[in-house]
Amino acid sequence: MTTADTTARLARLHNIIEDLLKEAKRQGASAAEAAVGSSAGLEVAVRLGEVETVEHTRDNGLGITVYFGHRKGSSSTSDLSPTAVRDAVTAACVIAQHTQEDPCAHLADPALLATDVPDLDLYHPWAVTVDDAIALAVACEDAARAYDSRIVNSDGASFSSQFGIHAVGNSHGFIGGYPTTHHSLDCAVIGQAGDQMQRDAWWTTARCGQELDSAQQVGERAAQRTLARLGARRLDTRDAPVLFQAEVATGLLRSLMSAISGGSIYRRSSFLLDHLGERIFPDFVRIHEEPHLRRGLASAPFDGDGVATRAKDLINAGVLQTYLLSVYSGCRLNLPTTGNAGGVRNLRVDMGTHDRAALLRLMGTGLMVTELMGQGVNLVTGDYSRGATGFWVENGEIQFPVEEITIAGNLKTMFAGLVAIGNDCDFPGSVRTGSWLIDRMTIAGE
View 1 (cartoon, rainbow, N blue to C red):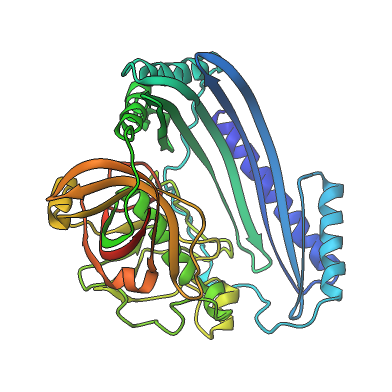
View 2: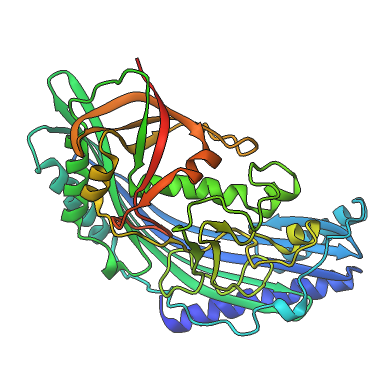
């Protein structure tokens, strides 16, 4: 898509927002806000060298919220025609007439809105053809299948290239929007040794297609991970240190983000309720947000309320510095918004000096977790229990792979018991961290 095409699409979204804000005012709303998006893409999936699916996607979406004083109504539509837009506004206005007043139902303070939208270099269209996409996916799977004779089957490889434009506006006069791209390639294969079979995968993702790992790198990494799991066995139930491999440790961070989200806090459904300003990690831990990271996978110049985003520490010296607040949740807590309507953007953890081998030596004897299953996280109490696979470690050396075990603990205790964070982050994603070594957890097995 050319720059002129993108500019024209963005102008159209701006016009739609202006029209619906005018329509909301005409129908008596005292204020209104809207988000409009348009996306298109190509997705290809192959398995055993054969094409399984080729999909061209195209989607539109519009959401409108109107305010009659402190009464609020919302509606949405995937039809961006003028008639559908008017109907969506009418539906939102009707809903607002029947809702109770909420003193926190209001727009953001105009002074907080993103009047200057920086270019974060998020748009890198790739004129990839269907044949090119198929060739990339096939090459990725071929690299995995050819890596070792023990790779006996495949769950396939897939390639995706997506383009989108997103715009937000409100009746304070703010309208902002920008285009984005997202490209990815992944592969999953199955290995066999004797009568045991194992499966694992790897992936690469980036805003710019030229920054993806090669198809061969992704395929070989998927094969290596699969082969490493062959010969897995169970463990007896015990307590031991646990090392969360870097890409798995991101799940602990997501649990932390859920626990400090404004919605969880004002509903009093978080184990970190009333912990603002308190130490919840050891003092070497710093966790921060970088929403303006160029080409970042979660970068954004403004949040869902139109509030300008900014870099900030969430944890500094182990102390919880802030909750993640939208305009609404901040109002409910009598705190200002933190520009996090829609979540956190580009989460980063300061890494330590230990590589993976050094972390294993520091742990001595314990479990290295490489995959987690299930949803066993209770954010109200912090109780944590999930199925796991990984490797048993003794004297700082991997002994054998393990499977069909459960690890359990409490997130508050786990955070406080964090021994070290590695410098071994080597995976793509908007959440970046090294591996986490936790001093002790319960491992349930045989």
